[in-house]
Length: 218
Image 1 (cartoon, rainbow, N blue to C red):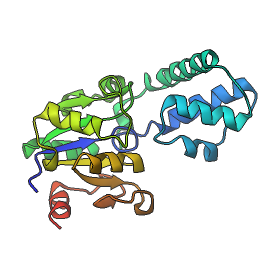
Image 2 (spheres, rainbow, N blue to C red; image 1 turned 90 degrees about the vertical axis):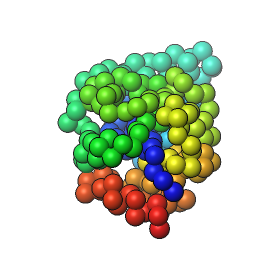
Image 3 (cartoon, helix red, strand yellow; image 1 turned 45 degrees about the vertical axis):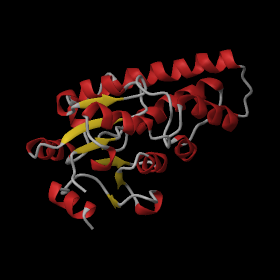
């Protein structure tokens, strides 16, 4: 395989926004009269906003109609956006910027492939927009991972064949989406949580392009 492009998921790979999602859901639950714990929050990882809300109200033992659900989902997102508007570049995960610089110097194209519709705002706050040749987010795709749409769209925007793309993902559904796209996938996190990934690394600290090349040629 010739590595021509690297596509990065956003949350948990480039930056940790999970804490802000948790705080926003926790506040929503408190407003509805029940507690939402970190253990509860594990059920929401990699899940859409509406599905997350359904899990939340199930935890609270509450029944709501569709109109009420839409209102609460919008309320949660507004609270989440208020948090991410305060983000700064020091929240970029360790090693990410250096690794992106290394890819750029080697002529390897880069893209973000995330379901989050807030991706442009987050990248702007992190001052990372200029690091990517393409950004594919929830505003450009309609199918959630493990559907490969977000990664195939990324390859298309980069004008690179999927087989020459490597995806970096931290969620099982994201790993499946990468494999469904016909791409290699490097997991970020714990190996037991990311079956199917070619290799799982804890993050980009001390991770070099030479390490990536060794992995994909194993």
